[in-house]
Image (cartoon, rainbow, N blue to C red; front, side):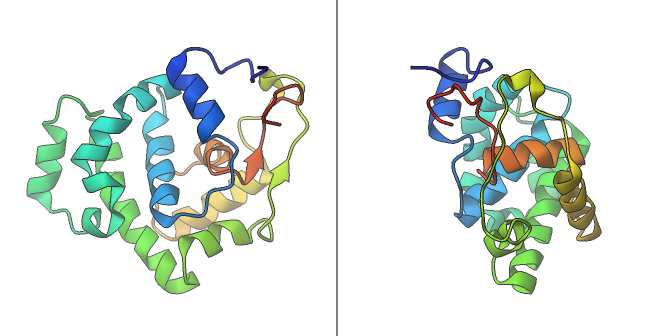
Amino acid sequence: MKRCAWALGDILIRYHDEIWGKPQHDERMLYKMLILEGLQAGLSWEIVLKKEEAYNQALDSFDYLKIAQYDDKKYEELMSNSLLIRNKLKMRAIIINAQAFIQVQKDYGSFNDYIWSFTDYQQIKHCYKHSVDVPAFDDLSTQISHDLKKKGFKFVGPTIIYSYLQAIGIYNDHEIDCDFY
């Protein structure tokens, strides 16, 4: 089987084969991937994936309705969890983004409708021969980043949002020789 060059090792192969580039419409998964992408800032994706289950347990299975209600006591509990990335700003962003996510749902009917409306509900299939040719960000990720920031989201810069668009399948950036292209 041919995969993108970056899909090395069991955890990255599983992510590549099962999630990355596949259109996602489930609200909880859309929130989860936004959080995981934000956590990746300054770290490797493999580190974040290795911590995914710890976050799943600590964050009520990424239930954004519950996370939006987290108080300072819960925040401190999360910050004391050695299995998590204990960055104060990233941890606060998880809670703030849950609140902003719910507001987007109220304003647009669903986060799915909001995020997919940027591409008229169509996947964009790029044609990259090599993963190294994929840009860190583009005009669309920059536009969405600015809009999310206006809506109160944190850790949603253009590079994070570009990766997010790949993760939820709005972008299909599999290499053209990859079997998943």
